[in-house]
Each structure stands twice: as C-alpha cells, then as structure tokens.
Amino acid sequence: MKLKTSRFGEIDIENDRIITFPDGIIGFRELKKFALIAKKSQALMWLQSVDDPQIAFVVTDPFSFDVTYDPILSAEDREHLELEDATDARYLVIVVVPPNPKEMTANMLGPIVVNAKKKIGRQVILVDSSYSVKQPILSGRPQVESTSDPNVLVG
Amino acid sequence: MVGDDVEVRIVEIKGEHVKLGITAPREIPVHRKEIFEAIKRENIKAAQSKVKDLGEANNLIKKKEEQNQSAPRPDKKPPKGASPEE
Image (cartoon, rainbow over all chains, first blue to last red; front, top):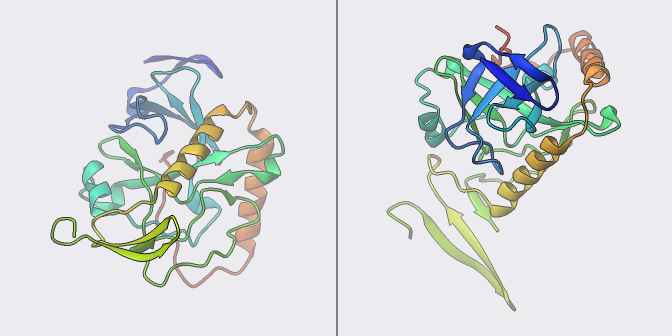
C-alpha cells in the first residue's frame, strides 16, 4: 500500500509489514496501525504510523545491544497478542535519539512485542522487572535495585 | 480484597500520605501510575524527536555490537529476539 509520511514522503509498503496495535501505543491510543521500515544491516528502524503521517518511532532490537535482556510477558499480554507460541514473539524497544546520538536511550521497561505470525503488536509494561524507561544504549544498563518480591508494589 | 486474589493493604499513614501495598497473582499486572506516565512521556519524547538521519546513531550501535562480540559473553544464552528483517 501507499503510505504518506512526513519524514519519508510517500512510500510503498508491503502489506505484511503493517502491524495492528489494537490498543495503540501508550499515549497514542488512537493509532492502531504501524509499518516497520527497516534498512538491511541497520540496527535502528522506524515504526511509522499508518494513520498519522507525522508520527514515527525509532525502534531497535533490544537483544542487539543487551544480550542479558530477558522480558517476561504476562498471561494478559500474551492473550492480547494472541500469542500461542512464544517463538512468534518479536521484541522492539523505542529509542529516543537526542541531538547528541551518543546519549540515545531505549525504553526497556515498555517494549513493543509483535506476534510475527498474526502481525499484532502491543506495548507491554514489564511487571517483574528492574528495567529502565531510558536505558543508555551505548553505555549499558545502570544497576537498579529491585524489590525482593517484584509482585508486591508499594506506592 | 479485590476479587479473590488481589489484596490491598495500608502500609503506612504519615500525615496526609497513605502508603498502599498491593499483592496480586503474577497473571494480574499491577502497574504504578508513575511507571505508566514515565513510559507515556518517553513515547511522546520519542515521537517528537526531530532526528531524520539515523546514520551516526546506527554507526555507534554497530561499533557497540562489535565490542560485545569481542568481549567475553555471559554464560546465559541470549533469548531469541530475531530481527523483524527475517
């Protein structure tokens, strides 16, 4: 399909690159469809809104820079994603690229999970986790203390 | 109690502030509003980024990946997070 974007002009995107987000992205609930625009051998990709030409997120594969990343999906999230087989899950994290790209950060606490088979996407919030919403990509994970029982949240 | 298995306790009362503790089974996600708001803020920041050219950022990541490959790996096998390219 033809897609209008503010960054790339009008682009042609294969239909199988369109991912449906039934609940949108957090803060952008009304945007339900995105296209993943990737260039070969480049770590950073664009997740471009189909509905709003202005909105695109820079995303990347979190495992490429953090081999210890271990996101655990809740039963609820698996259900939303219609994920029957865990191997169908693909993970992306949203990257903030500031004017100095050395300071770019990734949201490891709220990764985007895609059911690769059904092309359903969802931004999940990891419960059982000490991950940061702004983990520096280049310098690695800062040590964050975790609660002894991550299922008990006090706030 | 909320339903059969979600427990809400008052942990502490200090002046005007009440600290609540929530115990819920693993299947029920309990998200603090601050976490939700923090993710929303990062999303908005990401969407507003003016960066168009990711060339330099891509090069920096590539360099980091090369360093990771030459550094000794942790024992744990990385989870399979294949790129959507495949």
